[in-house]
Picture (tube, rainbow, N blue to C red):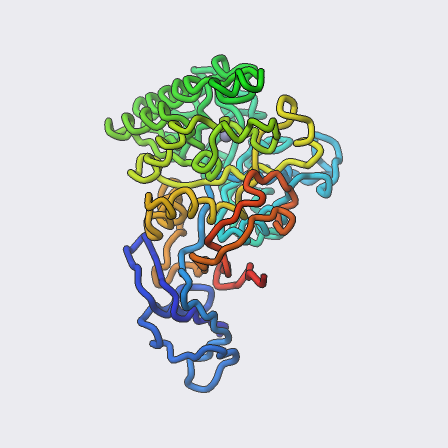
Length: 455
Ligand SMILES: [Zn+2]
């Protein structure tokens, strides 16, 4: 039987509290054994099974000086592939090759960044709003994906915000959550109906919290940048008000609400209050909202245009503190690929969004580990078991018997972020040129090495 030994790494499994140097043996795609260094009786360079040497290990990864973590889980990515065969697409035949990302290229980016499970948002064209679409997407993920791809169904039909989509059928088909991400569900009655249905079937609602009226027409964070750039603002209150609405409805309906990409101090405070009152609320933060402020926009580069927008330094500090104290449960990239042509339209017309999968880890190191905000086990919890718990996923742990989804990290390796080397088809990375530390060396899905850093 094919097996694999990860030798001598610092094995960190936040789900169990394990943090010790040792050997990890994978057999049949599962975590088989973990023990002290040398327990598996293998040696560096061991390549082919020898009689009695490791019960038939076929490969050894030398993980000394490295961290062996559960594979990362990202609850929030956008792969642009439509959840419908192109020939039958209602948008009429555009080629997969013209898309800024597909499941194949997006999951290649995922495993390059250490992510073994990614949850894909439904704001595709056409939107993922039916059981057929969800089933198609799952099949495409299995056929073309290097990582596990879990679809999120739309909250409303056509993602238009006017009537709830068929959540029951999508859940049966395999949707792991529901979201109209990209925009909020403005209509209060529709939003409440969606949350009540989600609660009834035990599903999680992932909410892009932004009051459309307050945010209307805005391009950048309301404040000094609106003056400096002469562009309309999106006030922090637009997010805060929407988070308060979502949290109130979570409490009223019992629906588990996950607040996407928290970006303001007010939104953090609203989530903190809701949790203190016992509402079933969780939240996430993105690399760009942890590591960049609205000052990045001074050069008017559309690569820094995101939704919600980059905020003030005090907002960033509040989000970082919320990640530290657990108000924000997990980290998610909001990986949003766009073509160079789309992003070349300038700050006003370009679509919002940045790619994030392949730069996430070192940006988290920069924003959270280097200042001493989090240690490695705490960071990895927010990338593994915490997101798994938000969506009740059977993943995110190195427990014996679990699927061997594993990420091997060199915590100290310096490198320079260069999107030209990314597996993602898109290049809209706001961290290009950053000198960073912390690199993914190998990524394993089900015991199979699906990514290896050969640089
Ligand atoms: Zn969003």
